[in-house]
Image (tube, protein in one colour):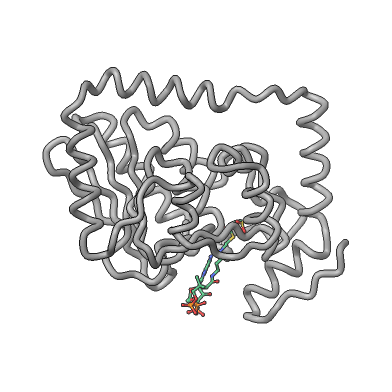
Length: 259
Ligand code: YXS
C-alpha cells in the first residue's frame, strides 16, 4: 500500500500524501511511493512537482514513522534510512519540487519540506523539529538542511525547544516562501508550478543542481566528521534515546536522565 496519490496535468506533477491513519508518517511504504513517483516524473516530461497532503488535514506529516526507528544501539538515521533517501531524492530531482503545506509538519517531515525547492503554507501550518523530543541524534546532512533554511540561532531554537513554529514566523525569517490562505493555496501553488513549467527546463535543472552543489559545499574535515559521528553514537547508544522511543510507543512523557 503506497499511501499516496500521483497525478500529472500538463507539465506539472502532483504527489498527494494520503495515509491519514498514520498522519502521513514517513514510513518505508509512503517514502517508497513518493520516490517511485518522482522517478516516474523524472523519466517523463514533468517540469515542476507539487508535494502536498489532502486539503484540510490537521497534520501534513507526523515525520519519521517512529515504529520503524531502531530501539537503540543502531544509527536511527543511517544512509539508507527512508527519510535520508527521500531527502536526497528531492534535492537531486531534476526539476523544482514545491511543498504545499497544510497542518502540522513534524520531525523528519520538516527536513523533507525544507529539502523542497519552494515551500508554500497556510497560516495555520506549523513546523516542529523534534529530535530533542525523542532523544534522537539527528544526522549531519540533515542538520545542514536545517542550517540552509535559516540562521544558526533559529536552527538552535527549533532544535533545542522542539516547539512548533508558526508559518507566519517561518515566512518572516525566510524559512518558507509564502503563507497563503487555505482556500486559495492550491490555486496559488498550481499557478507557480505552471509558471515554472513554462520556463526553460534545462536552465532550471542546471540552476537547481548548481545551487545544491554550492549550498552543500561545507568544509568538514574527516576528523571533524568522525568526531560528530562518535558523538551521535553516544546518543543512539544512550538510555535517553531508548527511553524517548519507548515513551512515544507507550504514549507517556519521556523521563530523560542525560545519559
Ligand atoms: O494510537 P494509534 O495507534 O492510533 O497511533 C497514533 C500515533 O501513535 C500515530 N503516530 C505516529 N506513528 C508513527 N510515527 C509517528 N511519527 C507518529 N505520529 C503519530 O498516529 C496515531 C494518531 O496519533 P495521535 O493520537 O497522537 O494524533 P493527535 O492528532 O492527537 O496528535 C497529532 C500529533 C502529530 C501532534 C502527534 O501524533 C505527535 O506528536 N506525533 C509525533 C510527532 C513527532 O514527534 N514526530 C517525529 C518522529 S521522529 C522523526 O521524525 C525524526 C527521527 S526526529 O525526531 O529526529 O526529527
